Image (cartoon, rainbow, N blue to C red; front, top):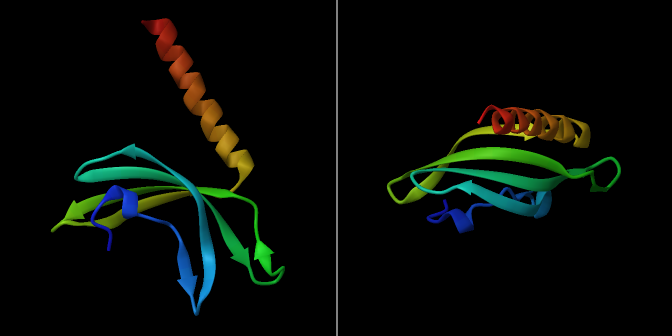
Length: 99
């Protein structure tokens, strides 16, 4: 288990094979509850190559000096990521005009 946010990773190996490869991460919040968005690729056994980049938002809680994953949301495609960005941008634009 990780003791700091910097140590947290989405990398996942099984039998010496890296099945989930972290490409990047952005820490959105730090503290007792931390939120991180990861960019990653999954290993495709049939094609024997990594697939297209995916994204995952994960929440961690720090207890007894170690971070434990508490929830996650996987963004499974580029299209879904773009839709999420558009929705957030639309809401932010609305709140800018309301001020």
